[in-house]
Figure 1 (tube, rainbow, N blue to C red):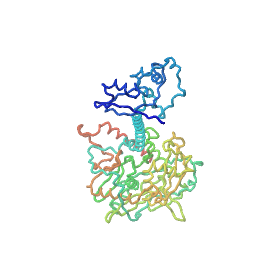
Figure 2: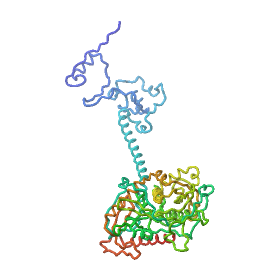
Figure 3: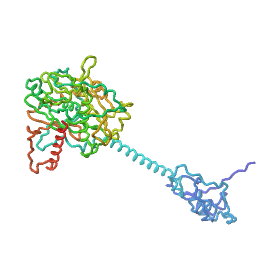
Figure 4: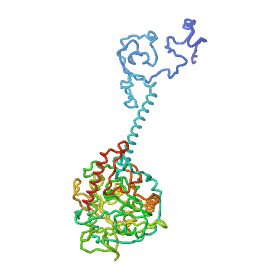
Amino acid sequence: MVGVFEVGAVPFNPDGWGPLDSTAATVSATTTLPLHVPFAPFSRSEKLGRIADFTRNFPSSAANQSNRPSSRHGTGNPSDSPFDFSLYVDAFPLANPEDDSSFRLVDAKPPPRPKFGPKWRFNQNRPQLPQRRDEEVEARKREAEKERARRDRLYNLNRSNQNQQRREAAVFKSSVDIQPEWNMLDQIPFSTFSKLSFSVPEPEDLLICGALEYYDRSFDRITPKNERRLERFKNRNFFKVTTTDDPVIRRLANEDKATVFATGTILATLMCAPRSVYSWDIVIQRVGNKLFFDKRDGSQLDLLSVHETSQEPLPESKDDINSAYSLSVEASYINQNFSQQVLVRDGDKVSFDEPNPFANEGDEVASVAYKYRRWKLDNDMHLVARCEVQSVVDVNNQKSFLTVNALNEFDPKYSGVDWRQKLETQRGAVLATELKNNANKLAKWTAQAILANADLMKLGYVSRVHPRDHFNHVILGVVGYKPKDFAAQINLNTSNMWGIVKSIVDLCMKLNEGKYVLVKDPTKPQVRIYEVPPDAFENDYVEEPLPEDEQVQPPTEDAEAGEANVTTNDVEEAQT
């Protein structure tokens, strides 16, 4: 027969928890409950998490041998045991206290390490379960802070790479010194140019001057393995004549052939303005109902930019051979010599209606033909521009005109592509790199070829013999493209090009008679129009100093800028 378990009588305490004080003695005599069971007092506001915790691991120590629970669990602190025996030490007497020193657990292996990693080790001497959730939250916060800091570093690094070009452009100087008495009339952001579009009918050739030499097809077979040395043509004259100094344009203007006059270089600069980074300026003269687009003597338009749209900054020192100014002079020098070296020098030339209008009798002039072409912009508005081609070639018994230009490599470390290794096997990668670093220059060359109605444009790849030698160069290859196909490849829209020209012409035709200058801002993608004195940019033009309280720039800076302009003129005269 199974025994019956009797709970016994439990007195009711209406005043609180636990047994009644008055019946504590009687209860101990009448009840069958076990005596001396430890009781942990608590209040009703406290949250009960557990009755006993058997999962805590504590270092074993013999610091307190008063009873088994405290000696087995460490320092003897009552809170270090599953139950609190501190109030009833005498309730559990040991038969032989000395036997406790030889007591050992059956499993002597060390307690397992927590799975939370090294970050929990510092908390081993304290109970871990009560704080584990808080520590997990804190650890997650720390990991989130580290991840956020890492993302911020990557974000700032990417932004610095993307805006490096814009930051470097901030140190560029304006191509012309803006004088205090100049009046700014308008500023046009490049963002408005991208939306413009204008279609022009087929132009007509009014006149062709000069003479052309034939292109040597053997240069098409040049590779980096059989490179050819770039020669120097010091005896040939190259002319960079502005619009109003051209005798043919003056004659056409007197004959009222058009109302707007310019050169192919100036038009290409306007058409590709949104791709430009460096500062440039164009002088605009309104005379009667006619409009002339000019360039200053020693203008930036006479030089070829190098790495203009690259993200890799160039040295700022003007004396460095890899600075922007030094590379521009070197690129112009290479381009001129290359355009004459690729010709067949046997004396056979193709002559046109008139000889070179800028050469004197007996001068040895470069192979160039000037095509004066007229476009119809409106019912009562026509534009005449002087365009250039450098060579001619026979294709199917027909003469095809060519434009010849040269890309130059100065140091593979800046571009990241070594032409001698990649040009023969990965020519597309080389061209893609050049399109990224020299987008404006290639677009201007393409625009000039389209304006001149050239059948083919030849691009030469010219590199230094040594990266530190900027005097000696070699030709590594020559590639030919059709201008319209190449324009589509570099995303150059002809309608957008003419839309930019038409908008600027319409804006200038609303101005009063006088002289103006269109300046590309050196730090922002925009152009500004200034009204300047009639004698500005003339040889005898001298700025009158303003009172000190009205001066914008110190006189020393003006003097330095004047010296820079004189140096530019000297370089250009040395090149011509």
